[in-house]
Image (cartoon, rainbow, N blue to C red; front, side):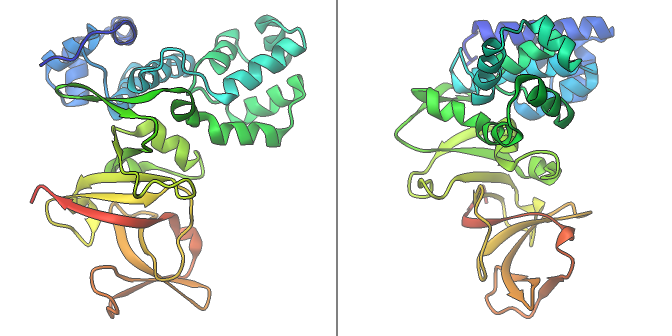
Length: 320
C-alpha cells in the first residue's frame, strides 16, 4: 500500500529532481547510487515516499549540494518525519529575535558577518540548520550573543520535535503510525550510521535525531533522567557477533560506570564492541559481556582510542 502524498514530500521530491537535472543525471543514476529500484526513485521524486536520512545524505554527495540546499532538504525531511509543518528549533528563534532586536535586515547582517543571506534565512527557519564554528563566532559578535548561549541552544535544537509536537509520526510500509506525546519516543539508528558518528564534529543527540530511521516507544526504559536511543542492525555488525539481528537500547548522554555493559566504538574498527567496563588503575579494561568474569579482556591504555562509549540498558535479539 503506497504512503499518502503530502505537500512536503512533493517539495522535497522536486528539489531532488531539479538537482538531478542540474547535474545532468538520470533517475537510473540515482537508483544505482542509492542501491534501490528506479521505481522507488520515481516514487521519491513524485512525492509518494520520502527518503530515509541515510539515503538523503547520499543524495547530497551525488548532487554536490550546497550547504543551504542541505539545510533546506534536511529540514523538509525532519518535518515529514515529525508531522510538524512549522518545525522550529530554539536556535532559529534565538537568531531571529537577536537580529530583530538590533533592527538588522538579512542583508545588513550578511555585510557584518560575510554569511550569505540564503544561509542566514536557513539559520532562522530550518530546524536542522547549524552554523559552522566560524559562523557562530561571527554571529555571536554581530548579534552580541554569548558563546555559551549558542552552545546551550545548539545542544537542545532537536528537542523541538518532542517539545512542540502533539505526537510523533513514524512512516511505515503500511502507512502512518502515531506515538502519543505522553509516551517517550526512542529514535532508532542503524549500527552502520553509529560507526560513522564522530563526537568531535557533532553532539550525539543531534546526530541521532538527524540519522534516525524510525521511532519506537518504551516508557519503561525512557525515563526523565535517562534519555535513550536504540541501535538496530544485523548481529554481524557487533563484536562479539550476535545471532540474527539485534536492537540495543542505549543511554544517550550518561557515561557508563564500572561493571556496566557498554557499546564501544574504537578508532580504526569496523565493529561495535559489546563489553563489560572494568576500570583498573585509571585504565579502561573491557571483558566479554556474554560471560561474566571472562578471562578475555581488552585494555585501552589511551582513552583517545575510544571514539565513543555508551551504557547498554537492554539487548533484544530478533529475526533468528
